[in-house]
Length: 508
Image (cartoon, rainbow, N blue to C red; front, top):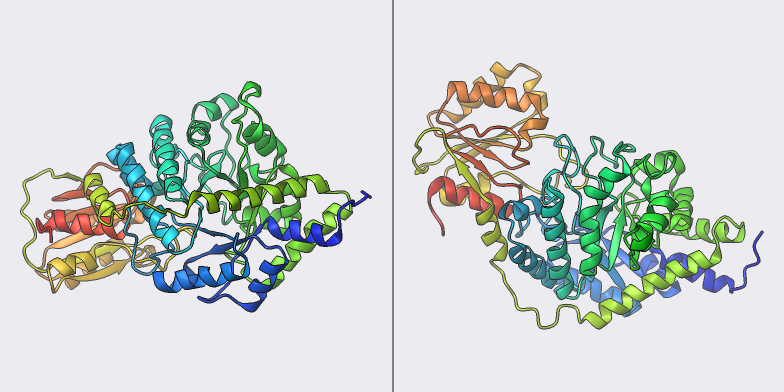
């Protein structure tokens, strides 16, 4: 047993300070306001908490009445992963689109405008950017959330994004350390394993994180991935070798020399919760070097906060977690809160409302094997729809039907899934063509290379209707097909708008 030298109240306040919990609803529940008064220093927001900008500003204002130095965090990557615009689609293209343009000044400007909008809503921490190098095309959870597959490209855009976001007074939380790009498993569901050796990690995965640290990122989010080259037993979130040794260690000792806040990915994700439980996982994460526990994407209630608070206090009293480590973690949280206050919450950042669409237009890649004419009459949009990963969610609309309908009224759409394909590719295509009638067909796909049923259906459709236009809204890994073929590098609303403009030749 350790001798706890600080008061029980101080210990409890520190335990609350390191939590980043969520809640349900669009107004602050009483239990959350009460915990803010007791020491809770961060609140996490998700799409379920957002109705519109005015409501969100009122919500964060009410939270700050309870705690003026509050950190309000959100997972707003832009592109496919949006919480601000969860029901309508993002006004910003995601990372892959920005990487396709490869103009760091544009990336910096996009991140600055995104940061300005967050700050206007009272949000001062963004769990972004994703600095993962998408080296595995089969990756089910990163994909268009990455700037690309080249470490140097990802590094320069990660740095630009951090600079742009933080120039608006919003702290960047660069993720998912030490890199989630070479996985074929989604850590929401299971524990991914990366078998790369240390040399490969240093030359590939770590390059963007070094750039983020050099750019001054205020926070880094850990990944729930096992890297035997670093630790044969524990995932990075729970590994002292990954967090204390690699991320914190000075460059002279082979580390990244990061001195800011280390935040865990969602502790309730199965990669941690299934093997350790959220209480044990939180204690191990703090002991390994994490400073803040992200929770609330799936578990968003008072009981979860109390369970984790009590688990941390108990771990200190039982000698499993040094009280100095908990105090240091809480101090780092409060240091970030002071930075956001001093950064001015985006004061003086000039609005750039059209920057997202400008970026989406520049990211668009159009190819065609044969000459094509712009669409001039209502079309039939066939959306080949894969299951959405949890990070993206299924609330956010995607595809181009809505945008195309604005330009060509009367355009209709149909969604086709793997379940439809199970009845046979021929039957799926026959159904599609019957619905289309004599209208031009636009096929919309997403990560065609990862979905054999989708590839088969598209092949059969193009054989039956060679003049079909194809819009790829995921990672473009397969050869261009269609007349024409458009690669948008993401499924954000602005990417859809750019594609609809290109198909019709109409730019409102």
